[in-house]
Image 1 (cartoon, helix red, strand yellow):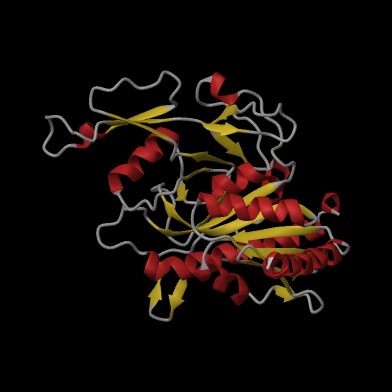
Image 2: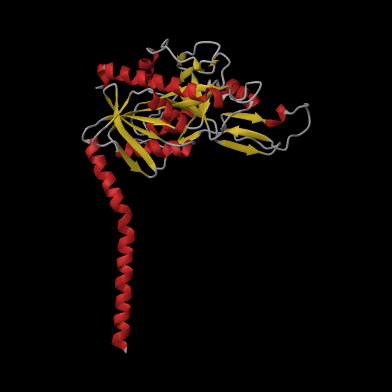
Length: 357
């Protein structure tokens, strides 16, 4: 009897081990295949990393016809994302669509930098327009980004932390004026920045993530390039879109479609565009310090991962500044196409620049 029970236990143990091996080995086999492909791809590097956000922007990029897929290794699937390998104007690139929001943007950027032989990151897509001197359809390449979504949200009589970089009193927007707004006030805090060369677990305060200066100078050569003015034969913008290099942008996990908040961001942070990913991509790639707010918020920072980065955004709407409905549904595809056209020309400029080889 004891021997039969022992045999049964042995069978159960062996079966359990077999099932465990099968369940554990299923996923790693796919992962090993992807990693082997990545090794093969990296032997042909380095590459420029291209990161956009959601399908309309991806469609616009592929519509340019500039992306030539690698016939031997067309793509690598990792963590639910497809990294596409190819060329643009002879320059080797790896393209990925990260998904909406800062977490997705940071995760996709870090994954690209960790696994592939990347020389720099070009992030692109659409954005809201917070600057009345800019127009829908224009393309902006900001020189720096602020993460404007790190809040201290206090009660109406709450005391703001002394190290907040800006604040918004919600009650000052009451209509009619007067009274107490129970939503209180918001203090804007700084980002905690961890760098590759910094001390472990020693974050430095950061407000502005600065874009790579050399790439900005190369991009400035594209100002004046022809951009698309019409969605179709019956729906055109009143003026020709333009490319502007060197303004400021803001990022948060908020889709801004509010005139008062749009004006607050412009007046307080002097930003011309608002989006939901760019600061995250910039922080994951390349960060330096900048002055403008009190100096203690710009403790000298170095490279996060040590890669140049640039952000190219087409303005699809007025972020709430319009009289009627948001125009993103109408002019979003046009703004995305104009941004994609600038991306393609920027990569051509990189290919022509001897310092980028």
